[in-house]
Image 1 (cartoon, rainbow, N blue to C red):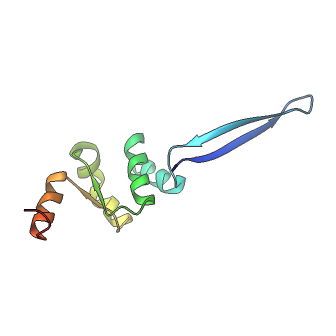
Image 2 (image 1 turned 90 degrees about the vertical axis):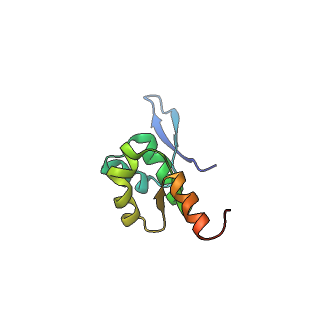
Length: 101
């Protein structure tokens, strides 16, 4: 659904053509590359790129060690529509808004 399909076409010595389909795990490779270049681990960069590509407001994670502390502030500055939060922080915000008891 959110995957991108590309292919490599290669011609052999006899004039035949072989296609190698390539499937990407992210919708926006450019965003993924920025996150990966920043130092995020592969799967973290893929998940966050998907959240950004799908216009998510909040990315919930309990991963303080490899996402929140080293990259959370930078991600929020670089992609200001996305908030990186602990689930407990979101609960606190929703309670303050009166959306949760």
